[in-house]
Image (cartoon, rainbow, N blue to C red; front, side, top):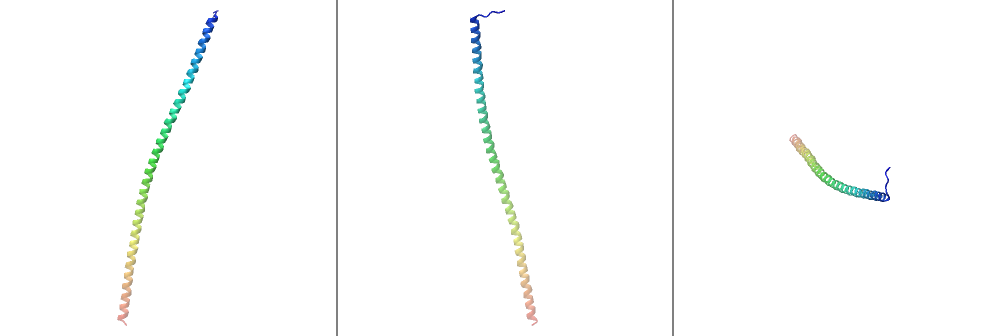
Length: 115
């Protein structure tokens, strides 16, 4: 059996305490490093989210602008169609008025000639 002297025991206990302190320091450093990594990751995530939001707003603006242009084109097309229909009805009305006037004139002339 191995005999340990009091001095050797004290030295062993001091080494154990030093090792424990070193482990505690290492644990604390690891915790601090983990906190720093988490903070950096959160900051990077925040930046990514901000960039994504800006890009989404840009895309939204482009889509809205395109939709507005398409609506304006469709409005112009519908307006043109209605103007053509109105013009056609107007022309038909004028033609009918002239035909009616001519018919009435001919009827009047016919009545005057036969009177």
